[in-house]
Length: 68
Image (cartoon, rainbow, N blue to C red):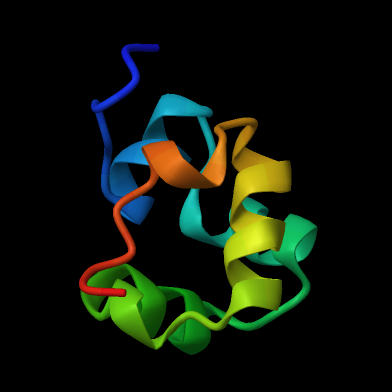
């Protein structure tokens, strides 16, 4: 992936081929929480950003988490 290319959390999930419910199981939190992070990625703290990166198989710097 190009160095300055980023994707949204939803795009990363879809790219991995996961439904919301499948992603929730792997991430360890509920549907409403995942939807919240997909709509407001800037709310994700470092531990959650790390988990998204791990589950979706994309380096954190390639996932858009809003203004940091």
